[in-house]
Length: 74
Image (cartoon, rainbow, N blue to C red; front, side, top):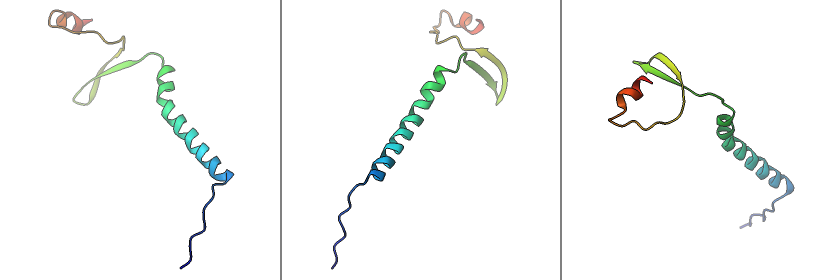
């Protein structure tokens, strides 16, 4: 029975590995950089799938039972 020849990595193999790693890093970092350059964020309020209002996102705010009425109208 013939044995398989021993495979040795070449420069082309290293180039392919480098290209795959760079592509993976680029695709992984894309959402991070897209969010940084997005600017203002908006929130769409939809009822039954139809957008009824769009408002600017100002950040997270803690809504408690005491401020629930005023937080809903701000």
